[in-house]
Length: 186
Image 1 (tube, rainbow, N blue to C red):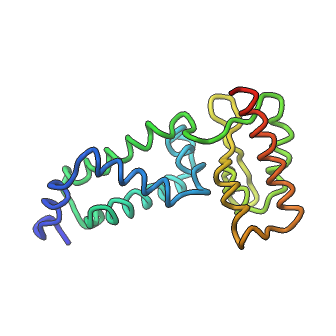
Image 2: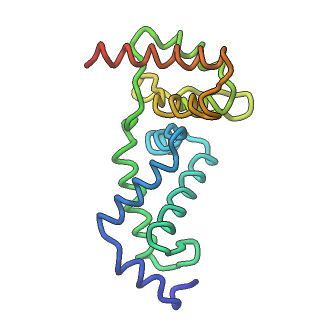
């Protein structure tokens, strides 16, 4: 598929704010348990691991293809890539301040970091921790520790909610701290 295929015109013919928002919504739905990636890439793009940026890039391309049928990897026009930039910018508006990620209450950060360190890699990623080999980097935005509470809840439901007892206890302890903090602030 190249620009002479007609897909460029199709994409530009259907593109609107509504389509852009549908693409963004699709990205967010498909990345539940990975919203830390969205926040990291859009909060501090110069410091984030290149692999995470590439992952979010691929999510954007896939969502645009699923919503419109256009494969931007095959389209070369600047106008088609402008649609991509609009999606990227809309994601940045939603996630640059942490989006829907929960903020850990002040003073509770050391306890939550200790709990995060005990998690297996996949559970840690679901909680918005960047895991690169043995390195674990909890997500801090504007000096506050952030947790993907929705990702943790989704992880708890994997395998029919039958997570091992110690893992379940660790994840529910994290959620209890975050939930208590949100009630105190609300």
